[in-house]
Image (cartoon, rainbow, N blue to C red):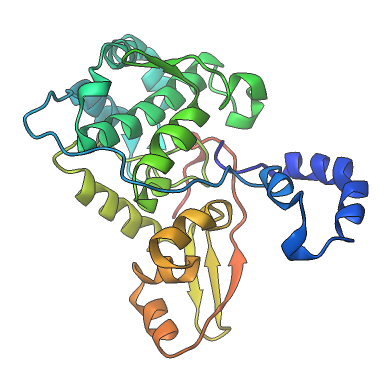
Length: 289
């Protein structure tokens, strides 16, 4: 669940209208429903911890098949040739079969992270193909989308939500993962035309994060207006960014020197959210960014 879509928010706001009036009678710091209410509008909060040790002598996993698929079917900017990938689907299935046989529990920290990032993105590609390449991932029935427990990683069968919110976010202290998990939407960070690899995953995540913060599709600093425009990743996962850097502006500033200087001078720009585009990240929808 890459955030909560606007249409879902509108429906839920209507259903919760009376409850919101009731909740208004509680002091903000004593509201017994605040955590529950927040869960309707945002992904679950997690406490980020490093759960895995490195295992340099442990097993590894070969992502070369997936890497070759990405190099052949992902264009510059992260646009996916889904028609070409569909014609090459047997190779994608071979990679998914390999994930099902992966020695996941025995892998070290970076091997696990690279595998989980690749698995999430590969499963999402398969999901799009399963439903005939829809115009948006939101056209797929909700119960068959992020919550469907159908994806096998080693001995485990997980949903996409479980991979993101149970296997990645709480087990790695690294908010850069939000710019690496790609939900097949234009508003997502771009899909890399290469697989994540354990021996390069840190550099790949750093490059991915730098890319996101250098493109107007996800980040803009309007210095004259004292405004910073941020991808909604920062809204949806603000708790993760705060755990790493103390706040969302502080996190973004790590990757944008002009914003870092502004914060150092005691100036905090007003935040505006960039509208999230849920149309498919296909080559047919390619646009400058």
